Length: 64
Image 1 (tube, rainbow, N blue to C red):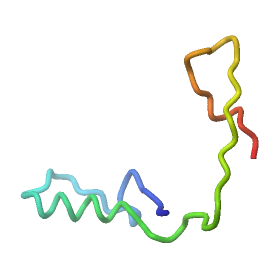
Image 2 (cartoon, rainbow, N blue to C red):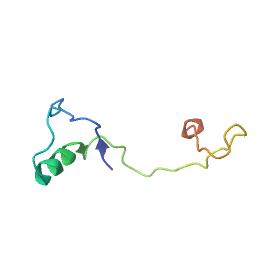
Image 3 (cartoon, rainbow, N blue to C red):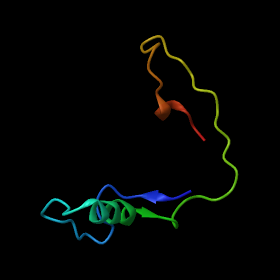
Image 4 (tube, rainbow, N blue to C red):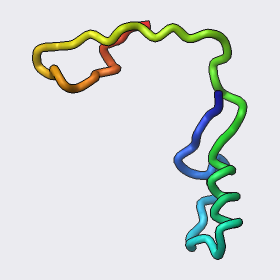
């Protein structure tokens, strides 16, 4: 598991585009952190379908 940050976790978001592929890869890797996840087994319950949205999976309705 890991934690993904949509922006740089330290708040240092660049103003310019990356110069090359190596810099872009470094920026992507800085968004992931190995710490912060919930370790251990995770049991996913079956989703409940509602008549209002038969083709949409609503993950908010699954209580853990």
